[in-house]
Length: 486
Image (cartoon, rainbow, N blue to C red; front, side, top):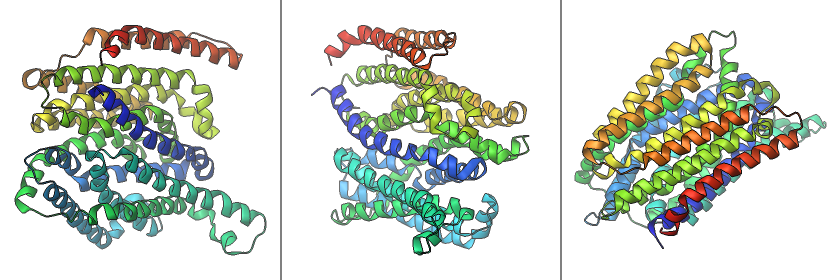
């Protein structure tokens, strides 16, 4: 099996777990938007955006460091695994202790009346951080099926509990039931139920992964820890900057939006952000498979050509997803409640921004395989600064659509900076003529589709399907010879 086909196969398996799981979670969006409303959905978006940033801080790039050192033939795998695990366990325990000491500060930050919200937040983060290295272990050992099963079990629990709390319990209550299940539900605590479901899901995932670690008998090595941290610290800064790029808009909106209900506007933006889920899923499943793949093939003589081919195929599939979501937005919009649909105009911008993020990730291989992660800091920080500044400028003036444009521009800056730095240190022969052609073709078809005004929905969607198939056909014709050689 060729390397490209192997990557495609693993991407498919990781993708099945990630895409199916995320899609099932995505099916909760109609429920959450209908039950929570714009205000509480805005609160949930704010909490999860904060969670994403804290998760990056608490994993501090050690996942990538684990991949790098575990793939080296001269390293003791048990020591790499054990050192990574014990380090994460120590820092996570410290986070939990300090968070309880300063619980009131967290409560003020989230502006919630109940401290229970903070407790759920703390333990969701702690468990997700502790799950990071066990999941990385499954990936480096190329066990995608086990990875998929564990992910799906956790997601299944989360979905089941959401349905239990937000549908079953209220229905029993409305039917006049007096039993325990009927009295559990209180509409004032609807946000609590969503977080409790997440917490239980993370806890069960942790329990399933625990035997994976115990049976290995991992070993801690302080000297190795220093080397791991030295490699991973730049990854931490890169990840932090990247997450700020992805979440700073949601954290700034309550303070910078001039609307009388900024949290509700955040809820609308957050719900429409979910409509870019297919692009996010594609990028996520690619990342799961690509990072170990890139490291394992770093020593091959034709690795640069391999990386260039991967980029080409990634962009083609990304543009297919972009066009697909836009062409079928009249169907996809029903996944969010009607009061959220005023924000649909941000979806095309966010889709392109996410695709650029995926390209930036693929470009990042040059500084990871050369152990020059310090340059990744320059790339990530440049994007984060652009994103923060543009959000500060645009949010008060044009509202949440300004955040979408800020995200797109910041990823564009990161892309340019990363490639310019790679020219000197690790030049990969990307086929820019073909890449630019694909982007121009996709943009042209997007603009063409915008000119079509047909009231008959079925006919309109059929025409959109023909246009999409046209793009796929052109890409297949151009890539057919190359694919036969892979």
